[in-house]
Amino acid sequence: MTIYPVILCGGTGSRLWPLSREMFPKQFLPLAGDCTMLQETAGRVTGEGFAPPLLLANEDHRFIVAEQMRVAALPLRAIVLEPVGRGTAPAVCVAALDVLADDAEAVLLVMPSDHVVTDSQAFAAAVDTAARAAADGSLVTFGIAPEGPETGYGYIRAGAPHPHVEGCAAVDKFVEKPDRATAETYLAEGGYSWNSGLFLFKAAAYVAELERLRPDMVSAARAALAGAQADNDFLRLDAEAFAACPAGSVDTAVMEHTARAVVVPVSMGWSDVGAWSALWTLGDKDPDGNVARGDVMLHDARNCYVRSDDGMLAAVVGAEDIVVVVSADAVLVSARDRVQDVKAVVERLKRDGRSEHRSHPTEHRPWGSFRCIDRGGRFQVKHITVAPGASISLQLHYHRAEHWVVVEGTARVTRGEETFLLAENESTYIPPGTVHRLENPGRLPLSLIEVQSGAYLGEDDIVRLADSFGRS
Image 1 (spheres, rainbow, N blue to C red):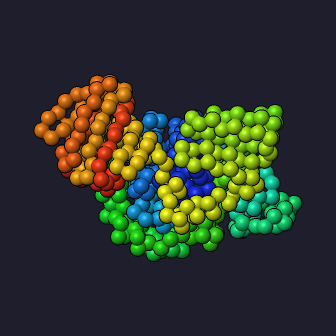
Image 2 (image 1 turned 120 degrees about the vertical axis):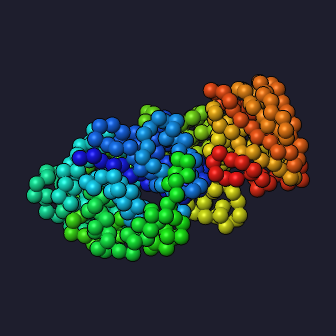
């Protein structure tokens, strides 16, 4: 059988702030390795037996998803854009219906994009076991062998062994996140697993069970897919139809109510990286129990997680059991056992009308990225990077002028009626109200400094006249 990976790319970016943000959540960051978590997830299901993955993402993250898959040279079936969040149950239904149009026997492997798996062989063996169980129409969830009385996960209690598949059992019941005493009881009793949020089942079996239990979800998913429109790399679901769909997760809509649910317990070095303390647990520790990433200096520190991702030195002296995370515009310092409370900081930022919860100083665009270096009352300085072969939209600004200085690469500039090339150390000036475009005709990234000056410098002072990414 062919397994079709379905990768769920949603996220709010609150638990791993300040590196994770609303516009750039943790799955797009290289938190546990050199590749981003999305790239690691997609790479885990590339090769024999797997079809190219189908990714589900939202509008804000669409270009980040596409670019990260392109950079990693990973195969791709489609990037389906959800106009609003409705939970995993409708999203997976859309994926199942899309795949069933090509393969009536398709098997889906549903995975969040932001989980870590360090034992790839154990993962592959568990997928093989789950696929054999799914052959008879079972809906398989993966249970993680518990490593302690964790209160941040739901639990699954295994029932009778599967009659034909070793290493698989019927689901006796799902249990919500317990308190510590209850979690300790589960471990003492045995037969309990952490609920991973990973699933494998035949696409047709999932749709059939969802139609039996929640026909309104299936109806809305069918309508959203029927009205979908292709847009470059993306498939946009019909917004009105999908917005009318009730919300729900695969667990609450199907798995907790079906007689077909089975569990494959597995120990595969899994983590949902739900807090900074998880990265301390996963990381390589020095003799004093510290995990350091980036430009970090430690003196008489023990059992700390210290990370600097922006080239700034982070020095920690005489501290124990703390987390320090340095980003371009914010620094987090927390007791290691209090990192779950980072969400309270994010909520405070929202209430105070600040922007640090939403975006980084470096903002990603379909053509590349820009980063604010400095700003004042009537000026702003940005470092702009344009990917090879890419270009910004043909545009104008009413309220600001722009000065461009090429640092590296070659720029093709459209300014009014003229078009010309700029090499390194050359510059040009774009007056207010002038139609202009910046392109990178080369094979290497184009890097330039932009100095904006004027009465208003907001990103909404852009009038797009033509655009390769459908934003005009």
